[in-house]
Amino acid sequence: MTKEQYFGLKNELKELASNIRIAKYGFRGAQKDLSIFQSKNGSINDYFDGRINSTKWESIRPEHEALSKKQCNLMGNFYKMKRDYRHKHIVYCFARGKTMNQIEPKVREKNEPSSAELKRLMKMYEVEEPVAVSA
Image 1 (cartoon, rainbow, N blue to C red):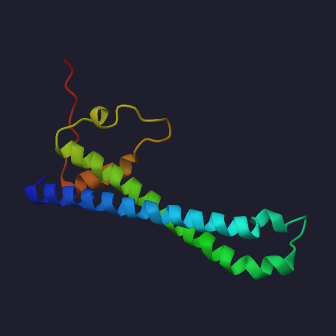
Image 2 (image 1 turned 120 degrees about the vertical axis):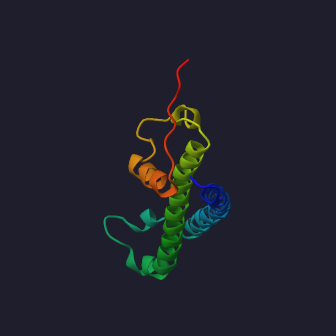
Image 3 (image 1 turned 30 degrees about the horizontal axis):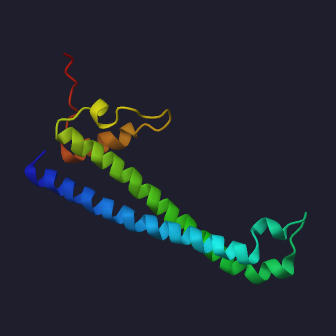
């Protein structure tokens, strides 16, 4: 990894962290907006009793769908940014000589980082995974 790549990756991580903080507040704001809307108008389940109570539902449906779509889009972007940050941070730590066990000592089952994404980033930044030295 060249010096330019190293500092470029470091700056990408800083920018991603900042964007994640901003996205978190946008996502939470969208959740709050939908929650307020539902407290005023009732949740979608309130309009179903085996069939749709269409007159009331049709009057609020467009706003409900817009708020739900906004929340889903923000949530998807938020989690994508968090995933990207995690993988780039691991590669950045590899470049600094840290082993995977030092970076993430405890990883829950089914929450491991994507090995394909790590390999792609390691190839892109020309980084090798450090080997743990046993004492």
